[in-house]
Amino acid sequence: MRIRTVLTTALLLLGAAAAPAVADASPSASPSDDSAAPTSAGTSFRNATEIEQGQQATANASTGDYLYWSFPADAGQRPTVKATVKLPSSARSGTQTWQLDVYDGLRRRQACQYGMQTRTAAQDATSVDLACTLRTVRAWSEPWANDPLPGTYYIRLTVVTLGTGDLGKPVNAEVRADSKEIGGAAAVDGSLSQPLVPGIALTAQESSDEDKPTLSSLKPDGGWTSGWWSDRWVWTGIGAVLAALAGIGGYALTRGSGRPSRVPPGV
Image 1 (cartoon, rainbow, N blue to C red):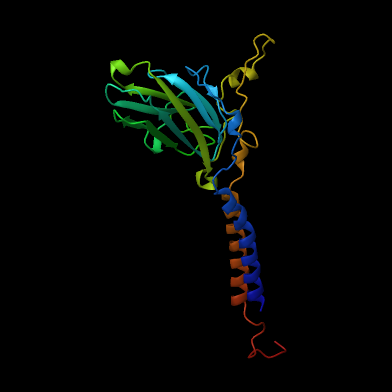
Image 2: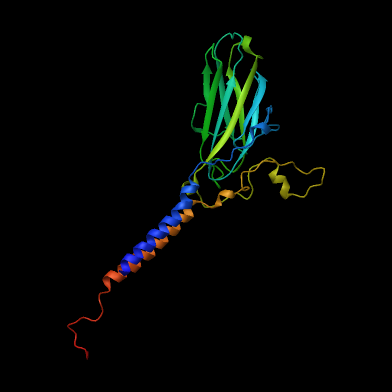
């Protein structure tokens, strides 16, 4: 009866603790109001247009322009960037190859886990779709590593191959960035002192009002380092509880029923 009570308690604890772990693994869903989404793009890293995750930004440009956007990504997130380029309806001289690149806060180009980062559009194509899913953003990394770190991420969209006669023709671009919360599977020991956003290093220094740096106005939901809690803590706690219950159960099974019956009462 005692062992049954112990097992029942363990099952109740497992059920209560596993609920937040499942919630941590669900995709991040914080759709933004697309009516307030930007309708232009920057032309360099310095003036990249800021977008929130879940927003679909648009921009009218000319074929051959470099288009830049930026968005925030925090530790534990796996960002996915998608872009659609609507090509001009007028006749084109040949095929066009478009490329989508993503850079981190240190302007290091990040590799895509999967997705069509470069795609060639046929001469009669009306649009081309591109996608790039990054590795999970880590809270901390070795200086020599190229791991994605929390901070601002830059999107660059441009055409890399086209006919000379197509240069300068109008195009319309749509870009969207989303993230999936990975949780404790990507948790590491350690964290950055500050996220990698433009101007963050200057805030720790004394500066006059004229020299005050302008930081990115966008942050992840809940602020930076919001991913410190993960299901890694939950499963660690579950393991400790199960180990304690196993010890109690083993003791209850092996201690016996008390004084052996063959021993005389006076001994």
